[in-house]
Length: 252
Image 1 (cartoon, rainbow, N blue to C red):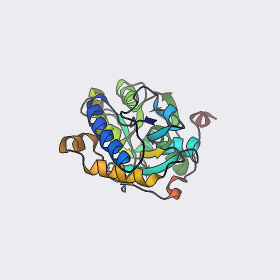
Image 2: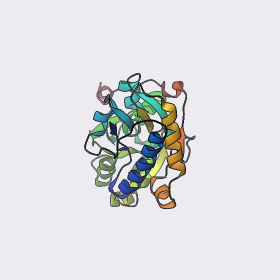
Image 3: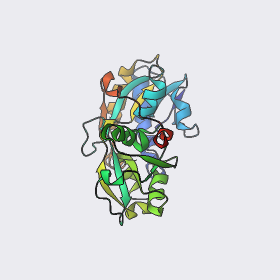
Image 4: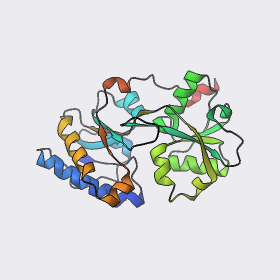
């Protein structure tokens, strides 16, 4: 059995995620669902998504839409109470250096963007889809591998801007000094937030119940660290938007 909550798991939130998992685990077992004792932090997050023994994982909506729809079972989307988002949705923030003259996302047309990964909805998919719809000229110049590295790339001048998951931005802010060099000038449209998934043979209902109860039972300190308010069962069509073009297509 495999379980991971890796999407926002950082050193400063590890203990809170462990306590959240313990509550979910016990809730699953009480509902007759077998669950591993501890979270797996050794397996790379994307390697765990399609494992046949997946008990619980988190996935952003772009790799779900592009690769795993029909191969995993959606449980519910995470609700982090993000500004400008309906429950169960998230968006990305356009960030530039403080001394950059850009005042709105449209001012960044053609300028180099640092993106975490081509299969990251928040780091690439959201801005690429917005660019297609608005005619914005995107220049995906630097793949960084992670939001924190995109923050550092913009702060150091390796790229002019990035789009950072709004939840990731606020949990990184207290501990990543490079964020102080950046300012937010806009946000992408919202899309389904980090989504809990399980193996396709599993009934999602007891998972939703166990996760919801575990979140509701978080202590004050853990709730403040995780910022997780609940889970929302979104309709299938919420995951229907067209896939964004790959980064290489913008240079054609």
